[in-house]
Every structure is written in C-alpha cells, then in structure tokens.
Amino acid sequence: MLTLRNVSKSYAGARSRAVLRDIDLDLAPGEYIAIMGESGIGKSTLLNLIAGLDTPDSGSIALDGTELTTLDDDARTLLRRDRMGFVFQAFHLLPHLTVAQNVALPLVLSGSLPAQCAERAREMLDAVGIAALAASQPRELSGGEMQRVAIARALVHRPQLVLADEPTGNLDPDSAHQVLQVLRGQITRNAGAGILITHSAAAAATTDRIYVLAADGLRPQAGH
Image (tube, rainbow, N blue to C red; front, side, top):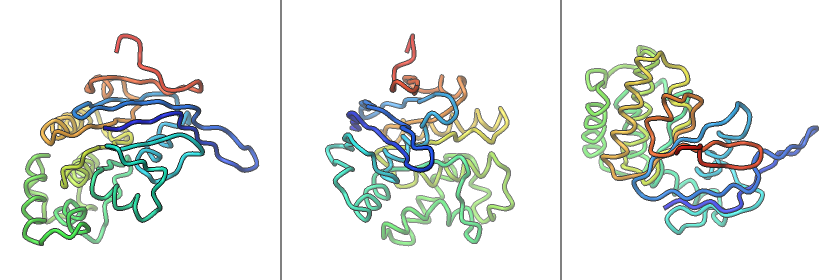
C-alpha cells in the first residue's frame, strides 16, 4: 500500500546536512509498524515526507499507486485529507471548537453532511472512551484526553494510512497505555495501516514490526 524507494532529504543553510539517505520501506494493508531512532535522526522528517507535508530531494513515495512526489500542493492536501490520518504529539486541537467539532473536522472539510459528521464523531468519541466530553472545550481536558481526541479526529474518516508522531510523548504511563490500545484497536478495526514514530520500546512493542532509523538508513530491528 505504501512504498518508499531511495528517499533522501537534506536541509540547506549555514550548516547544510543530509537528514535522510536512500530510505526504502514497504507497508502492506493491515500492517502497523513502529519507527525508532535517536533524537534528531529524521523520524519526524520521514513522517512529514510520507504525509506529503514536505517533499524529498530524490526518491519515490507512492500510496496505493499514487506517486506523491509528482503531485502539486493542492493534490497532496486532498490526498492527505481523504486517505490519511495524522496524530501529532502536540495534539493541534482547535481551541474555539468543542471536542465533538474537533473530531468531526476532517468530515466537515470533505463535505460530509452535518448529521453524518455528528454521528461519526459520536461513534469515535465512544470508541476512545470520552463520549461524555463531546461538548467540552480542549482547555478543559487532560493531556491523555486531548490525545484521545486527536486519535479520534485522525481516524474519524477511516483513513487508509494512520501516521502517529510520538503520540505518547507527553503522557503518563497509564494514559500512554490507554492511547496505544485505542490507536491499535482502531487501525485494526478500520482495516487500515499505520506508522508509529516513538522513542518508547513499550509503545513500539504494540506494533507488528519495529524499524530503526539511523544515519545509514532504515532497518528492521533485530528479532522483528
């Protein structure tokens, strides 16, 4: 479903540096993988390239046969909106919207009917265990609750591909465990695929396969 071939990315400036070199990856439908590595090695950069938020210097990134590197900004935005779900470490909830409205936002942007948006948002909030908070504002939530809202929003439109960037980085162990269970369960239930970026060995252990990103490329972790 997702194929990366020889993907490289450098950033120019006073200290020009190569962040990613010749990255290869194959992700099949139904697979959920973790990518680990040292801070600053390029894990978030790789996820941004896969999401079409940035473009590689060279190489190919294809989602179900659609080559992202040949699309313009508008086309990548539409593909990301319709076929991907992104869970950010910093949540990125809109403070002026309620919890339910935040979750429904991807459906609203895709033109779904208001009743359909509301019903699906309720379903997802129930799935992540915070249906009672539907009318709350983000400022009223704990970190774990905000992350569950972010997961519900990322999965509300049943995306082909879920990308999660350190979703448990700001959470206590109990909240992290709950978030990981929800994320895994919803990816499986929606018959999608997922990539989890994490520093946590415990979080990575909830996935099917673990990769390690290093200066010399992306490799499966020994034993996985």
